[in-house]
Amino acid sequence: MKADLRQTVISNGINITLKCPHCGNIGTFETIYDDIYCKNDKGKPIVIGIKKCPNLNCGGHAFVIYDQGSRSILDSYPITKLDFNKDDIPTQIAETFEEAIICHANKCYIASAIMVRKTLEQLCKDKGAEGRNLKERIQALVESITMPKELKEGMDVLRVLGNNAAHVELTDFDEISKNELEISIDFTKEILKSVYQFDKLLIALKSLKKE
Ligand SMILES: [Zn+2]
Image (cartoon, rainbow, N blue to C red; front, side, top):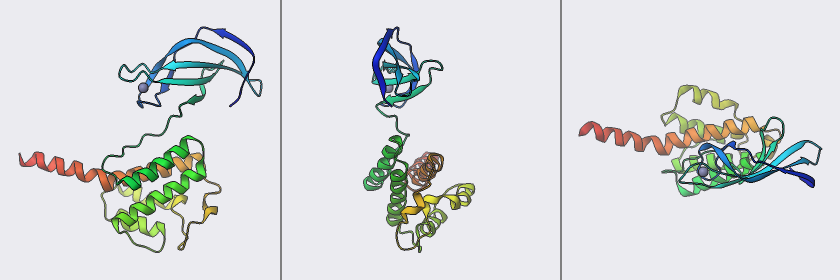
């Protein structure tokens, strides 16, 4: 978003509730200095400010642009990414999925969908799940892991899984919506958790039983 700074009014800054792009906690960010009241390039009244994370262990900065009337946040920097716990996930797979999340945060939804698909392909390869296309490989994989039945049944609608046997049909992604992508990301997280993270928890639980 462009802020037009040809006409500005400087006024007291306000505290703003935000998910911290640094520590990931949601908090009421404290204002640093005054806020700048101006308009965006479409003439809408907006405010610009620099805020500080209230978490004492963080204190990270955020640059925000918010609506003058509703005070809803229109833009912020650094970008807030979706949460992703990388624990015990093979580096290559974690890096691919991280890229999907970065693309999503930057509103590059098709690029993100392609990286989600790549994550799932790498995951199937790592676990030796076979099939003629990604959907079949994922199906083979989820049969072998602990995962809610409802999730297994629901995955059919995910366009990111595609049907093409030979290669990624980029046209599959042409119409992908933000919502559809976010559901694909959540689904992928659930699979990653089931494949790489539940086992460790189960082993830890079993070891408690023996004591
Ligand atoms: Zn923070």
